[in-house]
Length: 610
Image 1 (tube, rainbow, N blue to C red):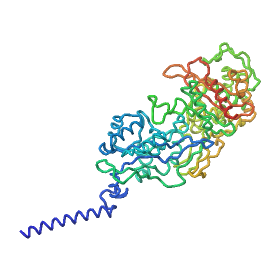
Image 2: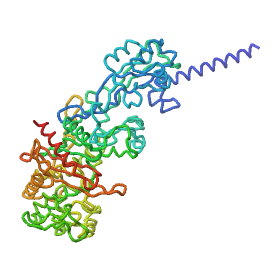
Image 3: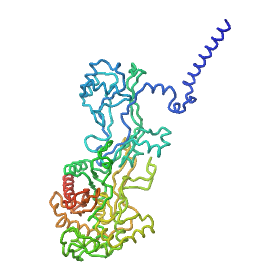
Image 4: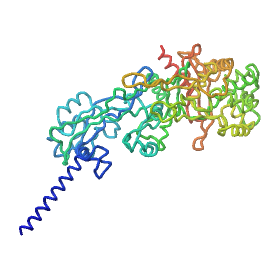
């Protein structure tokens, strides 16, 4: 009997020693724990604590954008009500909860139902709202006085300001775990990135994502026990990266006041599909870039999400805007002169090509042909030109390739060369890529007379974006010098010190440059357009302006449509801005709405300058 008791006692002591040893192993030797992943994140002690904590992100730590004068474009902080998943039995008395519900504008039943469904902490938002409810100072103070367990008034960092619409040029952020797994697997494995983090999805948010993402989020934790009851004596704890250099500040070239006024103007005048680009006439800095339909980050309004497309950098048929290029090629090669006369009776006589004016323009010079946008005169000139001559002139004017600011150098944390507008389409003059000399020659050899005539009036395979159209105007204003439109001037550390400068720069790799005399001739032609040509309806305004209208034939779902353009500059005597306006998918025969919008935008710019 005694021996049996001795054996049982020995077994019990052995078991106790085993569990004591096991506990010591877990507590003191986390690196030897069965789960290497748990150990790599701080051991079992931290995991145990994490089981009692509920975390809520206050600020992603992402860098913000500012306009050219330092006004914030993204990023605002306001007070919001944070709810943690505290069980109903531990939320305090019902009277306090009812007062809380009244502060938030809901019933106690609605408050309780939403709270009961919580599994993770949230900021309170109104039904259907994408952002937390912005508390007034009175609401915030009232909620603080209630001391309802599991409810805290905390500062929330809202990325996209509620005071104005999102900007396509700035872009948006979204969760994209598939992309992270494919392109950032090492950073995921090392813990530098999380699958659920927001990454840049378009615009500058995408181009500068590696710089903007910063050092990590600021989050708040709240201690709960296994019953989801608050732990006595433990309040919220805020954890954030400590580095005075982050988050970064991206200084754009945008004029936010002008941008917002133009957005309001085009919306008021019914622009539902199209774009506006305003460039500084001296250096091609992007002062304003508007695209419609309106983009709403985090939400689709259309079935295909087409409102996320930035039409300002999407290439489409330019119509008669391209006649500027055709005239430049004719003057550069000597194929035509400004005083040469052409006869337009309304029909070209071949290729089924006719002039937009029934009965034609009669006899007119090349300069008047531009002012009146005569298809017959420009088809005639185009057929005199070799395809290589027209292509070379277009390329010398910056067309047929991406125009936006870029560099071949690696910058900061970026993995490769930087292009500020990654989604910008290159556009085209003829069908085909022409990637090498042989392919280029084959492309040009395939151009027949009909294709050349249609190309000369901006139809057929010609494609141009509003950004390229506005930059074409800047090029002519600068006597043929092609600039790269810039959207960011510099990136600064959080303390204001400059991290990177992105200087205004000329376009590289172009096949020569048109003569200053050719550029001046085209500018005089654009003055004639507004003085007595197709743009004479906009002669009156705060500034005298000049420009070129355009209408391009298109189809949508098999239905004939027109794309309407106007590109020009103002004031005519001393140009300050170059502007391109595109109105997409209008009914054939309708008045050119782009021309009217151009006038209004120039008047807004004039008021801004006064």
